[in-house]
Length: 119
Image (cartoon, rainbow, N blue to C red; front, side, top):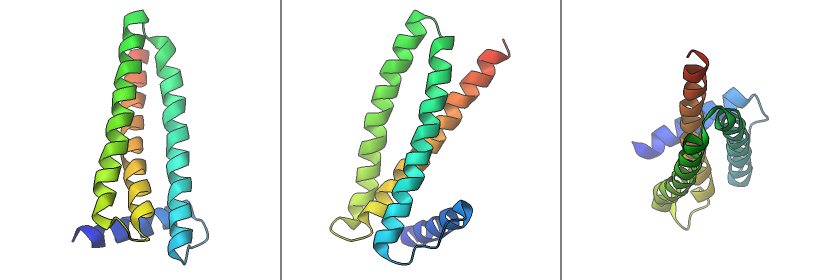
């Protein structure tokens, strides 16, 4: 069940990207990495917008939280991908997990930005 949902999600990501359909595992791995890098850039934009809106203590806490979150995200993605350790699909699973966690964190930061703007 888990593998089938990952395959469906990967296919949906490729359709959403409107990119050329990757046909080999290597192409799928490369496409998944590109999607993660795009999500990571969006996360960094949100972080850079939020950080200066906080007081000194808030900035320090956000910086600490973000470092801890990155450590968690990376370890969580490795843990999930390790179900496929040694397989050619490992990078795809790893990147897809990174992307999902990063998009979720971006949404959290964007919500904080909106909440601060409404005060």
